[in-house]
Each structure stands twice: as C-alpha cells, then as structure tokens.
Length: 314
Image 1: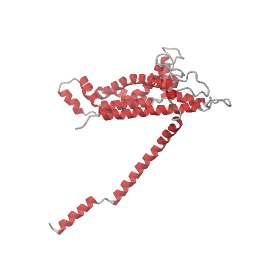
Image 2: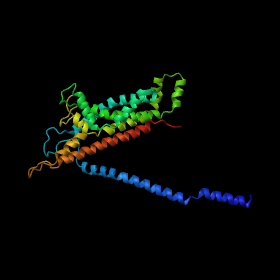
Image 3: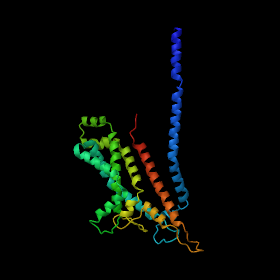
Image 4: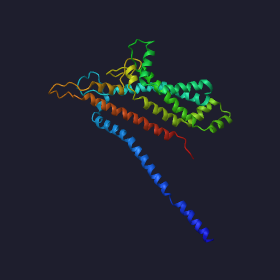
C-alpha cells in the first residue's frame, strides 16, 4: 500500500470519527433550547399541581369522600363530595355511551366507506363541532329538551347529552386517525381470502387499532369530565345524592368547585369552634384535587391500554 493511500485512509478515518465543531455547537445549542422550552412549559403545570396538592390534601378524608352536602350550611365542616363524584361518574358514563358508538361508526364510515359530497359534509361538520364553545352545547340541549319537557327541568341526562356534543368530534378524529394507521395490506389480504368487507373491519381493522381507539376514547373522556358551563346550565345543582340521571338534578365535581368557591367565607360567630370560615375554599380545593386525580387515572389507563393491546412486533 502506497504512502498516498495510507494518508488518504487516515484522513478519511479522521473525518468520520471527528465531529464537526460547528455541527457540535449547533447540536448543543438546540438541545439547550429544547430542554429550556420543556422546562418553561413544565413550570405552570408543576405550579398548578403543587398548589392544588398543598391546598387540597388537607381536606381529604374518608368522611369528605363518603358524605354529601345535604343539610350542611355556613361554616359546618361536616359535608363531603360523594354526591359530586357520583354525579360526575354517572353523567360522564352516559355521555360515553352516547358518544362512543356514534363517533366510532362515523370514523369507520369516513375511513372505509366515505366518498363524495356526504363524506366531505360529515368531515366539515365534525370540524365545526370541534370548535363549539362548551356553554353553547349546554344551551342547545336545554333549548332542545324544552320542546319535550318543562322549561325549568334539569336532568343529569341533559348534561350527558351536552357533554356528548363536545365528545363526539374528539372521538371521531382520534378513531379516524387510528383506523388510517392500519396498513392496507391487511385489508387486501383479508379480501383475497374472500372475507366480506364488514367482517374485515370487525376482525382485522378494529382489532388491529383497538389500542389506539381505546386510548383516544379515554382521552376524550378526560377532556369533557372537567367541563363546568354546560353542566351548570343543563343539570343545575343539588346538595343531595342522586343515582338516576333521568330523574332530577345532579351535582358534578366541576360545578361543586365553582359553587363552593363562589360562596366565599362563612359568617362565624365569635367563639364558635365548630365553624370554619374558609371551609368553602377548602372544599373547592379538595374537590379540585380529586378531579385532577381522576383525570390522571384516565390518562394512565390510556397509556396502559395502549401498551397492553398494541400489536406485538416479532
């Protein structure tokens, strides 16, 4: 091997193993900027979580989670949020039962069958529904139900319908994107075996995308479970426990937080040790902490479902 060849090989090896100072500086600068942006974004989130945790953890107790506010007035610290937790779960559950079938079937139509003006119209209205203010959904449900019920009627199912108006476009969009990720080769292989299209969708497409669809649905639930305005308009408030969404008003955690905070300080007589002046604020902070925990559990469940049911690569 000649000297020139040896020098060329050494020079090439040096170029491949030595980092360009300019690129190295750029890489470090961008890394610092990205981590700095991440830190800035985390500051308000961590501050919010810390504030709610510090102010709300002291109010949590078995009694606070298992009693309602019926018969609780002024600065009495004996009440709890059981009725609000129950109302939140029932109303959100009914909203999920309404939204998931409609949203999933719409997504299947848009991905598997949708062609022409009808599909474009459905897509347009889904986009429009995505930007509807939440209070407008509540007013729409109240105006619609007034056709069949008395004007002053407030029911838990009305809140579920209002939440479903907000939830359906989120479910449609998330399910649509998950269905589009299914490779066409899987569909074509199923068709080549003589499997009908509807059975291909059920057995191949939905089964392949079940993890992403479930995650999208859970995220849609987490998005609407904290809505206050539509529930305040369509469901109203109550201090009692109500298990029936079709009979009477119900309390939810967001409305409970708003109501307790708006009550302000209680008027306590001097020397009354049973009266807590800021108990309404404590109740609001405690309910806010419980609501955040529920939303976090939904997000964690979505992550676990995505991990458990995602297709395994060999």
